[in-house]
Length: 221
Image (cartoon, rainbow, N blue to C red; front, side):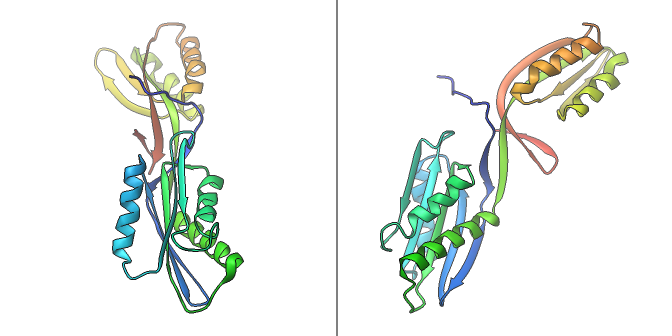
């Protein structure tokens, strides 16, 4: 069964991060991770519980799916709505997909009240996400262009002017250049290639995939 691919870009956690705030001597430690399903989310929560085994609360929220089809949050013993919901609000406001945030609290001896707890968990979740590495995934169209050497410079110029990355090249009697434009930009790119080569380029449309630019390199998913 083929997976359904959506054109809109979406953000995900690429490398999880950690943040910490202190509020009236209570420590709030936030850790994030990328997840694919609910089992991975539960496993990450259990990992955090073991790591901070002596803490009083491990509150969390996660969102799974391209359209956030599954999301959960937990107050883990804190007053209802003061922990899990604020953490989930951070994920949703930042439009993070397939991500989880767990905020561990070490009680400092002073009650914060519902408003204080809400603000603390919200701030801690933001801190963890701020220290994470986020990426934007786009639906992209793989394209290979076979042409003679006379058109290499023009094709590469068009791609560069449109911000389309070249992913490979092969030089023999002719040249084959591979590009990975966003799916919504592929048709316009191909039309311009036909124009500048007067139809002398052989354009092959390949597979659709999600991709992101990481450290100036295109990574496919």
